[in-house]
Length: 415
Image (tube, rainbow, N blue to C red; front, side, top):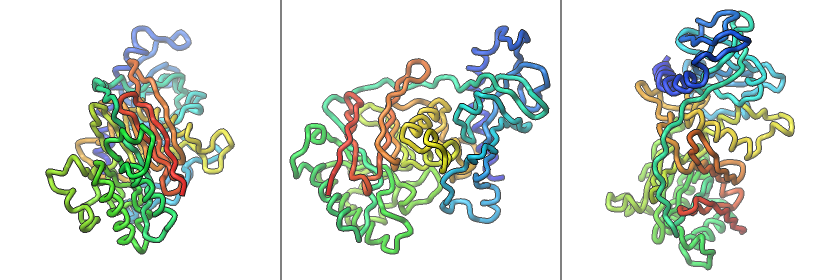
């Protein structure tokens, strides 16, 4: 299997971090029901009646989850997935822990009440309830990773937008784009927060649809918008699910040939600070603020594991649920744990580009159902700001992030 080496690297690399936390938490005489807890090096070493803990990778067996092996065999891996949720409202889904030796089924209230997605590496504490079933009483995540020192840039901000959805046949959207352009360029009066904007970051889905028959016209519209913005403001652009870029993550930067003549002057090396076409996801250094940016496919896929499409009111897809999952991914220290199982990615051999080796100051996710903002406190009192961006073409909204305070403001353009 072409993805085996990537899975093996992820487990080996993340296992070290999880082991460090597990040993600190559960060693040194820790007991369950009066019995000392022991470490098991492999899942298949677990024995009945013996309290223990073990580290492995979560695997979710779900009724509606696509099978990546079948997709590779049938040459459909990388085609657009129509499934809106992988979960079964009837409760037939199973959560397992796996390693090189095999799998064990995880059960217990803590498993039922904790969001899990395939690909996360964790430690579990408990006891075998019956053959092949492990009753979990506690879960352990990787030890803390560093966060770079923060240098706040007072008086500077950046504009964040996603889902621009440029097209050549939507007059209302064209008007919104013109108003946005005039606002960011200073051609019309604006609030102080906008006047301090030093860069525009476009977080994916800048084109209406890659399947659109008039993709050339949409790219011309996008190129014209960006060329006008670039006369007064630097731009960073990420590809997204709808953009003309490879679907597999990390998506490669949008190629300059897509924009014909409109952006030709800005692709020169001397203008690299003015116009930046980057990967999705990517890390940006904004005046000393370390920012992690995603166009949203990773979060959309994680949501399919925990939010039933036809679930109860409590389980419906809200921005708070999404922020919970985004926060969880920081604790898991993996930007896209569901790749390659249900999220398409390149078959890396000696690395996993989605493993986090440091925590960002800000994590921005584009193309979400609505705007969201949350400050989360992680291990070692590390604070990270989470921001979700709505699609501009449907909401008319974009966000201003103050690089001095890390506060954000949502701006709405009505047309």
